[in-house]
View (tube, rainbow, N blue to C red):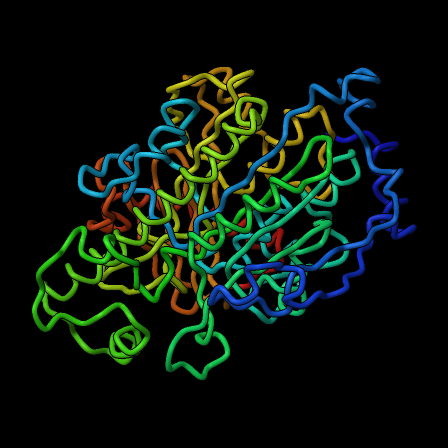
Length: 475
C-alpha cells in the first residue's frame, strides 16, 4: 500500500500539472526520404514537450542508489493488435509459424492465461498504460472517450524518472484527438498506408507491420542517450486480413471462389451472411498469414536491438489488446465478445538479468499487471490509481496459489466476465443470464455449467456483483 506521503506527492503532481503535455504536429517533412514511400502519416510525427516532472517518485527514492542510472534497463512494450494467444507456437499452435515470438518465450517467461480488460483496442490499451479498468481510466467507447486527467500513464511515470519515451503505432484512433493515450510520450508517430477504394475515414488507412518496424528502427538509430521506453504497436493482424506475399498463401494456397479478407467480406459477415466451412478456413488462413508477417517484423526489430547491443539490457514485453473470433462460439470479430478467442491474449516477458528463461506461469494474470511489473523492476512506486499487481511474485514463486481475479468489459456493460481459479463466469446484465465455463477442462468454452455447478456460479457472481458495485456499474 502506498504511504500517505507518496499519495501526497502524486496529488501535488496533478495540481501542478508538471506532467502535462502539449503537442505540435509535424508534417511529412519529418519523415525524410520516406515521405513518398506509399505510407501516409496523419498528422505526422508528434513531438511532445513537457515540463520537468520533478515531483514524480523515482527509482532513487525506492531502491536504486544515486549515480546508478546507467544500469537501468530500457523498456520495450510491443502490442500486437487482435492477436489470439492460441495462434502462437509457444501457446500450443502447431500450424502458424511464429518463430520470433516463440523464441522470445523460450528466452523469457510466458504467461499461459493472460486476460485483457476489454474487447476493443483503445479501452484495452488504456488499461495496459494505466493499470486500471475502464471505470477508472474512462475509455469505454472506442475512438470517442478520452483518458481521464486524474490517472497517470506508464509513459508519464517513466518520463518523470529520466526515460526517453516514444510511441510508434499503426492505428489512427491512437492519435491525440481520439484517445489521450499519447500522454507522456515525448515522440509519438503513427504510420499508415492507404486502403484502395475506401472512403470511410477509419477504413481509408491501415497499418503495415514492415512500415511500423521501419519507423521503430529509425527512432532507435536516432534516439537520445540514456534509458528509453519504446512502445511499438502493430496493427496487423487486425482486419482487413490482407497479408502481403508470401504470407497471403502460406496457410491456404488454393481456395477458388473464396472471399478475400477485405472490408466487403467483413461487412457481409456483419450483416449475418453465413460462410461455408471452406470460406471460414480461408479467412482464418489470411489472419494467420498476418500473424506470421507480424512475427517476422517483430523479429526484424529485435535483431536491430541485438545488433545495437541493447537487447539484453531491455525489459521486453509482448502482448495484445484482444483476440479475434472466427465463428468461435457462434461469434465473429471481437467487440462485445467475452470468450477466450477474444479476451485471452499472449503475454511474454524477457529480461535476462532477472527473468527466468523458459518459465511458464499458469495462474490467471491480467494486462493491468504489466505497468506495476515494469515499475517494480525499476524500483519505482505505483501511482495511487493502480488496480493491477506486479507479476514478479508469481515469477519468484510459480507454484503459488496467487491466482488473480480478472474482469472483462464490453463498451455498454451489457455483459461482463470474471475469470478466477480456472473458471469463467459471463453475466448478461440485461437478462441476468449466466454462462459458466471450466477453462481447464473446456478451454473452448463449449459447455455452459451454470445450471450444473450452481455453487461455483453463485460464488463468482457474488464477486462480480461486488466488483461492479465498486465501479458504479449497474445490472
